[in-house]
Length: 402
Image (cartoon, rainbow, N blue to C red; front, side):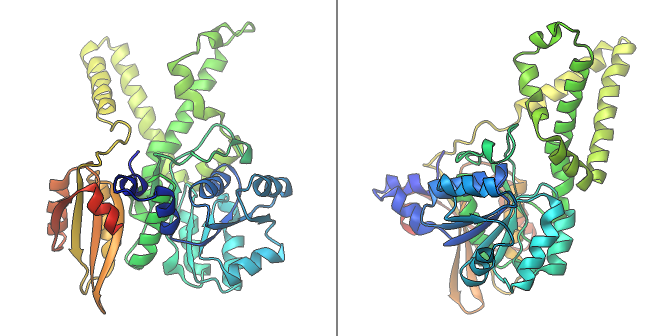
């Protein structure tokens, strides 16, 4: 995978020193040390060792494990005075990695402690936390919803890995109130974990994630229900369930309690997706019952073509970087709008920089990899009223300006 550290190395710089210098937050509170939160703490310890990570979890054994492994400088329960002291005295970023049911309590604590710094989360549904952040946070505009599209069939801190986010998509949902610098720092933070940022309108998040994450989990669980219902006492059918079946149903081993919560938190979008899924399965069944080979073949062909069109592993060329410069004069919400447009046409933003020319006059500079449709990006930016300039750059140039 190509990142700024590799590009710095190409220019003769020390990549480790570059990563440490680039850490956008010096002190981070990770609330919730389950699979995602603990993996985040572990990744920070590995990739940004100078960042002070404070872990919070209701389970004392989990806190002890996170501290013993060196993933957190301190890890404690939410009622420990050390948590409040960290938030009030030094915290620059709060990451909420809890179930939705715990959100209000932690946001209320941040309110009571006067925390006005950057807040993000890793929660897979946004409906509730968006409303809660608006109502409870002292500075709701500094909340930027987030969601790493990564996971494992293993649960809790026992399944945590330092490399869980490498190459994974990490959704960020800025809006017109998001300060450019806040989004820039969060983008750098996620990129520093070797994930790739996908910007999405926050109102679209739950519907999109239902289709690519929540419905597939229910389908995997349904396949396991089907196989289990046909398994005899000898388990012969399960011995045949190898290869593709195991890959397809791997996620069904996830926590039932966790996934029940996710399903009901996103009930409307999930229900719609499941109804669409049922209709697609019915179309296969109807074609089969009617002996309609042409329709059956067409359905299979459409799916095969769509699957082949999915991008391969992310291996952008280090020789084909592109800088996009966009004036930000007298226009709010530029970063959110531009980054969402870039994501919509498949362009990956390697880094973001804001060049402040004068008070109230700045230029947004994006470094793009060689992915996506740059022509469509240009067209959509121009149609949105932006003045845009593109220029190819070499890795060594980029290393010097990063």
